[in-house]
Image (cartoon, rainbow, N blue to C red; front, side, top):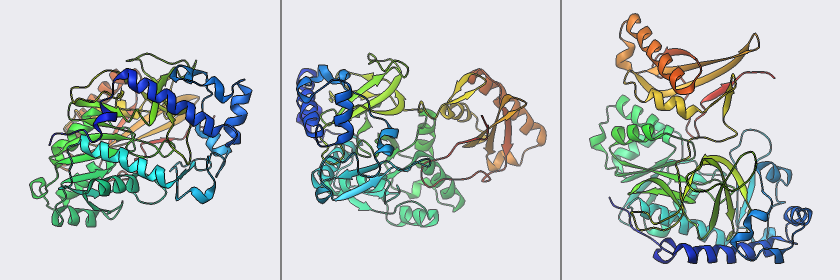
Length: 435
């Protein structure tokens, strides 16, 4: 399947035209927020700014940042820019610490979201003749309903399976013959494993496209999913605070993700100084969702680590592209002074045929020294091998992970299917250190 461009005028606009449009929409967004949302009014006054000071995109860097703590401090409705009577839906983050980040959607916001998801689905090559199996959770989490509405707007036959009940998921994949699957990448791998358990060969499925997101995943995992499910995997990005899935997606021309630049102004900033960084430099991703009505956000720091790239893509789109997110600055582990991301470990595991891409990282502090243990599931075939061969593989993994991370970690291979599975976002790290 080759993707096509859903909204040609917006997705192929020249950089100069997009720059002007973004500036107009930024200025309009600031005018809507100032005097309406006390949080933004106070922050702009503290910065010595009024709406008249924002006339173009060049003024963006003068505006204050917004962070998740700001949203939690204004819980539940303090960031809403319209009366509750105009809000037709509420979503909230799936965060496990502190108060949830609550976002409101007007009817126009729902239509905007559907439009962005149509663009995303088109980039994968999906058309109205496709059948989409949505295994993202429905509810306060934005994953399920976002793609559902976009698919229906496109005319795609949509199966709202939601998450969980893997046995039923497999039956639907076999019986209903969907051509596209949407879920987290870790759940896609879990589905692939369970298909084998139930004796279902991938040739029995009609899947051509996979739309995976909501958690960091490596290019090596992408390859493994494609091999196991016999489909083309695409990376979709979004978060509740900005809109939900559909903010950006990869295309058939490569692994960079196209941002819907007419609705989301993207920056990458230095995590320490807050200064904007040029193309190709790694930093924290910041979004201004300037066309949203319910909960527009100015310079929202996602803390996702990525790089931005301007210029025309081989697919024909001219929208800004972002590199695949492989970690978050606030999810980063610091082990004995070394920065460690779970995806670094994952990239090593996926080169070993003896193990599965199912792992857990446990961090402890023993005698004032950080200790990290990585538990990794063996493949069923390798599990039946001798203890000596298992120990040899543990030593190889130890060496590879030490080489990749620059620090040592205890490696323990465990029996197949003994580590916890997640039907939503995968939890890879248990940090048991006390400070």
